[in-house]
Image (cartoon, rainbow, N blue to C red; front, side):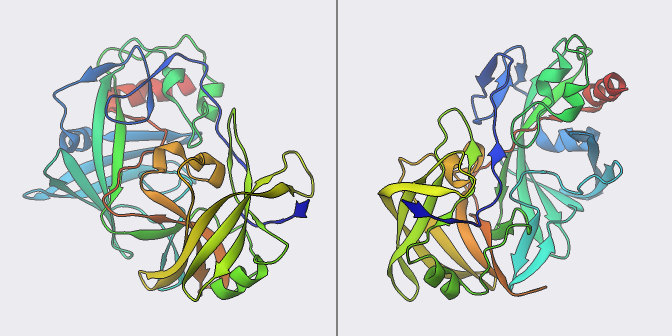
Length: 343
């Protein structure tokens, strides 16, 4: 029986909704069955008239203001202490450039491009996010069914709202499909420590009898895993994967390795990262990658040099690959109803 260190992070919860859901035809996000798809929908028009996001008690609004041609500035409004981002998903709290941590930041400009997409650019780090909306008429639908957290649970706002309150006529909800325009290295949280300062130290520490515990999301068939490095090379090698014992205060790996994977050390945007590759039969949620993000994101350990030197668990967000969060955006009519129902 192997014991292992927990450096992969706290467990993230993902619980099924209590409402009847159907998968959107163009995204993996579940949409309540009463929602009616809007065929003639333009993402840029949605932003011109205002797009709202509700995350727990936070409220944001984004509006494209004309600058010239297909270029727009973004007029953004955020409630008190609201994260200033278009998506509050758990993988984009920090970006890493040349080893330095930086907050993901607030998008300030928008450009309309082909394919019914817009590009949101954050100055400073010059990170660009592609967004395309699927739109749904939600008139007459129960509001609580559309207020989700980043972990696909009913939001705190929904928990305090009556189930019977419905959207008025003219209410529209949007499901965004997103892509990064260039590959990014991101850190979900800096609170998770590995105790190592370099990737080489990290590999050495977890190549003996002590594997490393990976972050995972709890679901109906979840299986946490731990890894140990084997066949170590200068830039790449193999990992052994163990099943981790559930509900153990000290966290233990049960039995021997159940699968093998690979690691590769590379440099992305001036930052040294170690990308991990797992067998396809493993559920991505069991290694900390949401189902809605698995096509674009890859688990990695990141060598951060500023503000202090340390190795942190993170993600590689590959360019031009679709990902989603679990949150709807809304037009002004729907948002006004949500705000009224919240009081």
